[in-house]
Length: 196
Image (tube, rainbow, N blue to C red; front, side):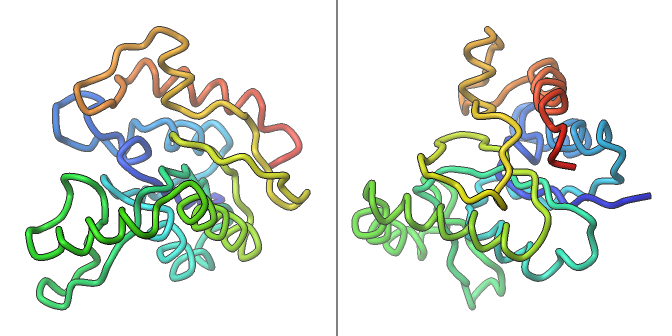
């Protein structure tokens, strides 16, 4: 069976679908979409993840998969290697250790204005699409750009805005329930002809 790599943030990792603060990886919209399209999916989305993390994981693993379902996230996120923990630390409000907080504040002030944050997201999208076959979906905070023909977007409505417009309730942290994930997966699936 064909294999799909799922990349994204908490929306793609299924955070708070059924239990507050927990991921339900098997029930995120990206996982449902992959199965609808006939792929065996692996969910490598990271709660608090960034577009930089998505590209890093894709670069390391894309050769093992037939397609990548990229659930792009906000422009104000990145990551930094923390030698103390031996792990990548997300740069996202509320998601860092105290030692990395000063770095996050400096990064937010100096690197996430409308131009720099937007350019960072564009860089990741274009680079990943040049590397492998990608279904591009925005979880939230889309960027406007005249995409080349090689960058395919099945829908132009991001998951969060679409879910709100459809009347799905969200948690305090802005996550949606299983019904929203299932319906959005169906919406994207119906618009994937010519992409996969």
